[in-house]
Amino acid sequence: MTNQSSHPNSPDAAHAETHDVLANFEAIVARTHPQLRAYIAGMGVASHEVDDVAQEVYLALFRGQEKVPPETTPDRWLRGIARNLCLNHIRRSSRRGRLHREALAELLANEESFCERSREQGEFDGALENCLRHLPEDSKRLLLLRYRDDLTSQRIAEVVDSTSQAIRVALFRIRASLRNCITQTVVE
Image (cartoon, rainbow, N blue to C red; front, top):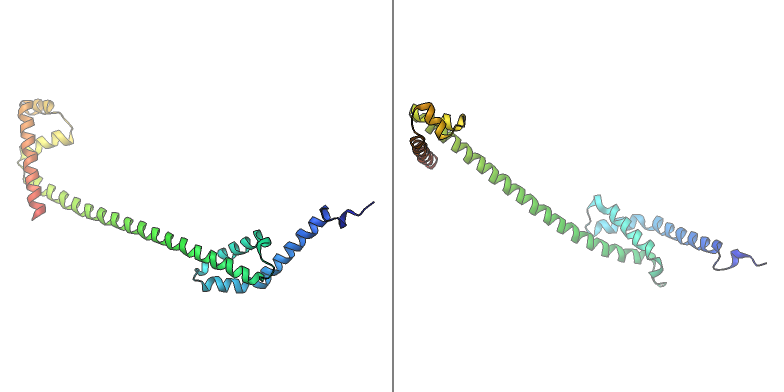
């Protein structure tokens, strides 16, 4: 009977090979981690993102260990991976930063136009109040019945003993008068 553990395709041999690969990888990480972090930081990656990029570098090394040429040291291979990942990271960050700046500019522009509209609305409201104060009492009464009490021209005509046609004409003239007054007040 042959010993299975000495056979290259046996489960014990595969386990031993996996163990050797992991042990080799852990040794590389332990030996290179401080230098790799310094290299990544030196490439211009923000300090709060250095560990994330380093993790990506080690993950790439682990996944592609079989691609490392025998004549190349793992340290040199790691620096090559780190260089490429840092450049990609910086490009992404730059693009993300540009998008953030554009979004911020748009928010500020919207806020500015909102403030402008609010200021204009405040001017309009002030002008409207001033113009309403100068209206004759009959005109104020018609406006209150129409807009506060939400009455139709027919119902207002019944209340003030007039015709609905006369009420519509009167409301049209009152609105035109207010429009002119507000325009003059805001322009001045």
